[in-house]
Length: 238
Image (tube, rainbow, N blue to C red; front, top):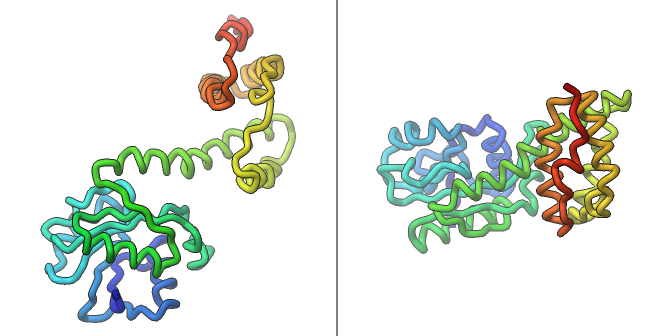
């Protein structure tokens, strides 16, 4: 059982949350003889920081994208990526029920990683080192691009004179309803989609290409046959 942990980067978003949770669970932090050194530092700094630590205790990082090789020369190593978006404005409750990707090269390392995940309140699953890039791309789609979509959707509401923050309960409703698809594409209402495009072309033309790409992906998800580009795109002004 891991009882003594040294966290490097404890003041960052992830580090502060992890530190608070481990302290809640009675783990000794900052001991001179840690059983685990946990790197909560930016991805670009992991290899440099790891190289400065004397081999001995377990060492792990919390990056979703960085391979285990960044922890060279350590062999007692693993990674645990909390699949969550963190804010310093909130506390360790952000970890509750979130999933955690454990990557390890031995059964012992996997056991330690799973134990740490459970101590933090995460639901652990195993992730192969070779699958990190595609896994992290999925995480970026879900978290980072949602922020982008909220900003762009908000700009369309602003163009209509509506408050962008009115979208926030809508987004929460989509989450609470289990991501059930609704709206014109789910109904096959292509006339409404065409009107959307006309309005976007007039008010926010820089969003037209993105809207069409997302419409195509959504039509596939809804098992609807997307009309031809000519049907979706009325003749653009010269």
